[in-house]
Image 1 (cartoon, one colour):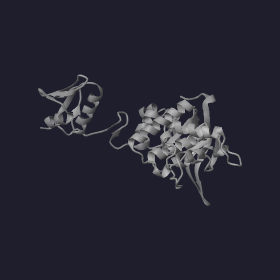
Image 2: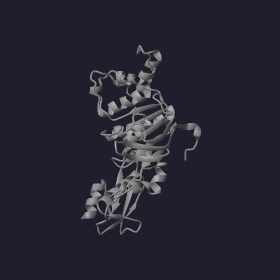
Image 3: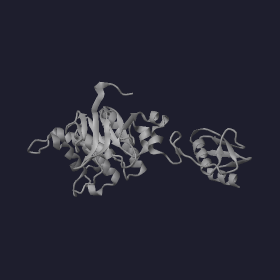
Image 4: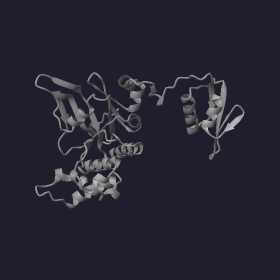
Length: 319
């Protein structure tokens, strides 16, 4: 899909990743060839414990590879956001973000107008100027993660690596951060790699997926292709979840089948409620339910009755 050589920001060649001990090597990924592209958000996914964090740290230069090469890698070309907690106190958000400029400072550690501008712009890029003077110990987990991303942006590197940036965050902050990273990849033309467990968000935001397999390889492709060719099902072995529809599979235990007529969100949520309650929904259903929406009121019509809520409809069907 992505083969424009001019836009490759990072490449691995026959890379093996893991740990060496005195007597043996623990190889997590072996002989992998990967590419990160500028302007693209890549999500790195796989089962727990398979080695995603280790690969991130290796790409960042914090850990030596067992074999192979990583091209275009030095301390000024990659910024890294880890999940490690910050223990410092009495530090403001601006102070934290300013640490991203330290690779550029001289021996006197004095900031130039360009450094101050980079810090301010980075804070603005993640939409937290109102937090600039707030102490980091006063931040929520989501706000702190945004500040950490701003610090990485202040380094002004073409590559940004993040390890589980949405871990332990609520849904709003998870969505906010994934949308922010996609926007930064586009706007700042950065190559962004995110190791994540957020399957639903990754499928909706990632330009490309790196999918860690159990045979120490990494399969790559756009999310939709990896869903349709069964790669996700093979790796994650979903129990009762149909990735192709994005829904949990419910057993039909009611003796009635439903012919549902309607459209839009109200149709999808009605179908969801019916299937959760054990009804089979098909074109051949023995009971007909129609949904109407006049723009202000949604109504459900079944068995010569009209209902204003799905709950009332379900109660009637179960009786």
